[in-house]
Length: 80
Length: 228
Image (cartoon, rainbow over all chains, first blue to last red; front, side):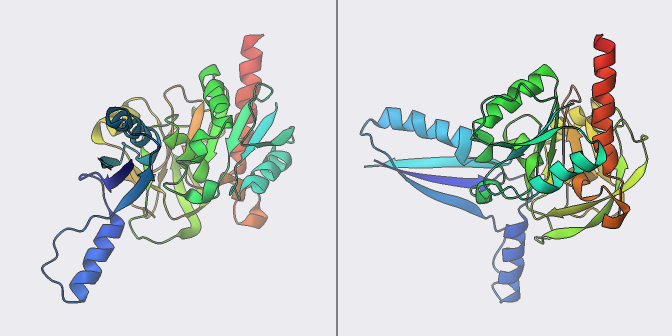
């Protein structure tokens, strides 16, 4: 089974990288760009076929290590 | 008084930290590898700066699960003195021993220069040699020193007098309320972005950081005296 994890900076937390990329896109002429938020994308290969178990385990991984919930939100998808 | 300087793969301020203890307070001090499982011999634990585990994922995120960190937690609960500097501060927040988090500097630049700090709490184990309100000069060297916490946490930090240092001049990283260093509720765990171990002699540009090490020794001596 494969887990795809997305970690993003919380809405109310400053994202200096996102702001810099937004500024650069504007300079390049992409004026239609509103807010830019930069996050992380992770692919985890899981040695299990038990979806419920995988759900629980990946959530624990996110809470403990993959995201810092003081500043980040996370979501994940399971496939396979 | 016995000091430990923790060493993770990627720590790079560990030697400065150890030399600062040796030169300033002349007390026994050991490097302690991240795999250590017993810190009971030590009275103070110093978590130095650097880029532990390459700062992969997030600064301090992986170091926080090193075996030695369970011992640091125990030591914190026992009231032993713990100081995290720079990456050490990031590790202590990731470990939940201090509130908040350190995010990317708002300038996106690595800032490496001396800063003026206002001592906001001169009652901690590491700041009792200073006066409240005093301005000291200690260098910073970080790319991710932008302290963030939510409003509720900030109100709690203020109410409990947990803000130890604020940037007195320009805020170099965008940190909430100009915070440069904080402590836990008990005051025995302190974390800060500036590097006191790099400011222990006038030859280094400032000796203001030396007093943090003197503070720890003084706190230890008075603790031992009151226990007697």
